[in-house]
Length: 178
Image 1 (spheres, one colour):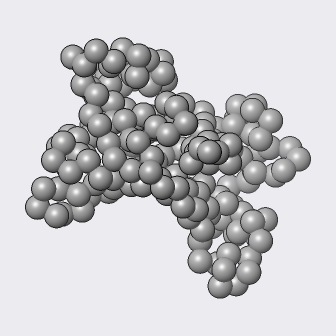
Image 2 (cartoon, rainbow, N blue to C red; image 1 turned 90 degrees about the vertical axis):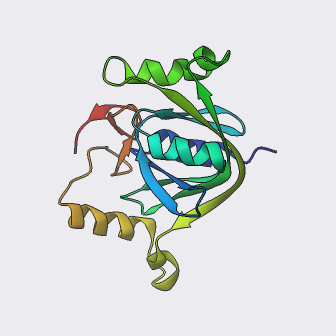
């Protein structure tokens, strides 16, 4: 059994940002956004270190971490808890592990390291309104569209999906913008 099933992978593949939580050697928590990542295998998420000096420093002394992916329109996502290994440019497997990230980055970003998170636990993230007000996903999305003053671009399901390559996608894979 895989922790990152198709539902989790689908959410990860369509998120715009993910959030990496780490803890320093002095017990000080840190949460920072990450722009480039890919599911590496059934239990690993590879995150590009573009400007992640604090995260990398924390993970070298305390590899415990949490990665969150939330769709701001659906107001739900997943929390991945695990441990991280820093794969540096001089490591033998850097080329292999970083290749998909470097392909996304192109000339826009320099990938200094890869933060390879081995996932040990996956939990859903849901906005409280789902439970407290029994709101439907459609209601949550309509409220988010109103809050953010955006209109859906996809035909059919009526909501945008996002790829972590910086492009917005309709649910049919078409590219567009909100």
